[in-house]
Image 1: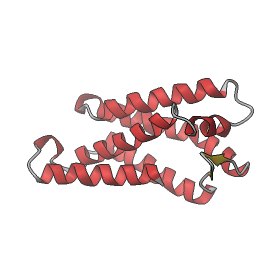
Image 2: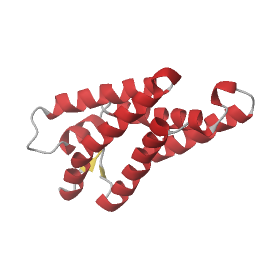
Image 3: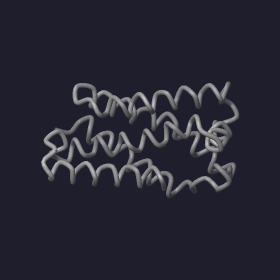
Image 4: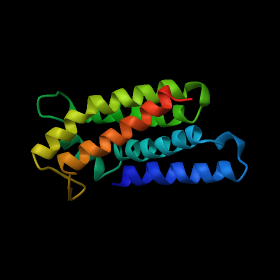
Length: 148
């Protein structure tokens, strides 16, 4: 739920800043970029901070090699993508790449839900709500990538 809150809060705060006269955030597209960047900054940091990191490593499907390395690489990609979303010249490509990254990582969420894992002492989000959240996140990336 924290990633959704980061997306929504980041978007709303950025939009309010745009309405208050900060021209770089004047519009929904720049505000969405900030919201998605906030979400990926939050999730990217989780790839390196305990106890989240251990939970993310455990979420990697058992058939994939070197889960620690995979979590590190995806964390770096999320943080780089978050930064690139804030640069207008790279935002569309960053959003497209992050959308593809989310699709590539979704099987880990399915695997974790099926194995009933815990993440930082709490059960992972069940599959149906997780899928709905993923649709929201990927759709936001698509709006940024293909929008105005």
